[in-house]
Length: 286
Image 1 (tube, rainbow, N blue to C red):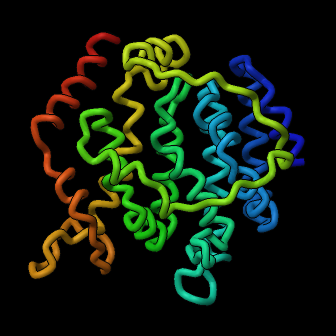
Image 2: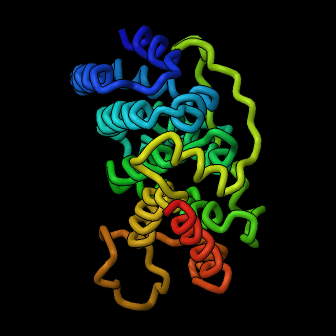
C-alpha cells in the first residue's frame, strides 16, 4: 500500500485542489497511524528514502508545497517510531558505524543521506524549506540526535549555507567524507524523474516561489527552519570550558564545536551584508 501510494503520488504534477487536498489529509492521517503501529513500515519508509535521487524529487524538486509538507510529516513520524527501537541496548547504537564508517542502522543511514544534500539544495527548482524542517524535527527527537548533528559539524555547515560564496570555510564545511551513507534500491518506490539542474539567482528563486505559493513568499522565509535548528544546536554547546553554564543552555551535556565553527559563529561585516541582501528580497516581493 505504501509503495503504491508513493508511486502514484509522485507522478502528479498539478497542484492539489481543495477537495483533493482534503482527501490527501485523510490519507496522511491513515498512513501516519499505520507508521506508528507498524515498525516494519517505518523502517521501510526510511530505507526507501535513503536515496539521493528520491530525496531530491520529493523534497527539493517537488513544486507542490502540500506534498513536501506531507512527505516531511510521514518521515518525521517514521523517525520517531524507529528511534526508540534502534536506540535500545548499547548506548548510541543508533549512530554506530562499521569498519568503513558506514552507518549500521536505518535511521543513521537515512539522516546521512539527508545531510549530504545540504548544498545541493541550492540548484534550480529546489525549495529547501521543508528540507530544513525535516532536519529540525530530527534534532528534537532525542539528545543523541542533536549531538549527532553537532558532531557532523552542522552548525558550521548551516552557517556556510547562509553565507554561500562569501564564506571562507568552503573546504571544511563541504567535506562530507565523515558522513558516509549507503543508497537504497530505486525500485522501492519506482524510478525517479530526471531533473535538469542549474543555478538560480535569488531573484529567480523569489519569483518562482511567489508564482507557486503564498505560504512562503520570500527567499528569507525559506531559511526559517535552518535558523531554528541552528539555534537549537548552539544551545547545546559550551564555548568556554572553565566558565559556568549559561542559563540558555539545553541538556546537561556540554558539546564542543570546531575552531572554524567558533569563528563563523561570530557576526562580522559579511554577516550583516548577507542579512541585508536577504531583507532586500522581501522589499522586492512587496
